[in-house]
Image (cartoon, rainbow, N blue to C red; front, side, top):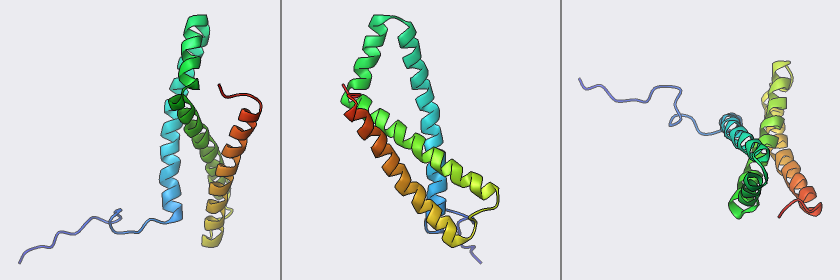
Length: 131
């Protein structure tokens, strides 16, 4: 008798994505992006300490379209990771574990992350922060 090949459980092919699982994966991804971003920040600090030429090169890279996209993505990751981390702290304290509250807090994190990131960039642009 031939045995049927079945996926191991739990497996991504078995369960459909839910808000909570998607946000958990996104939280991990943003954590990795923030770790890489901290290396870029350290490189910028080295450029600042390296003198005017090194700083001008770093400023030029960050003011480019690619640099602005990278900074926007990094700031969005920072805001999302912070807000979702606060959500996890509430869970650790025993609050918001029931399904309706978990989904409500998940949507709140997503909406607030978009609004706060947009607000930060709008404020920065209105103050002349972009090159």
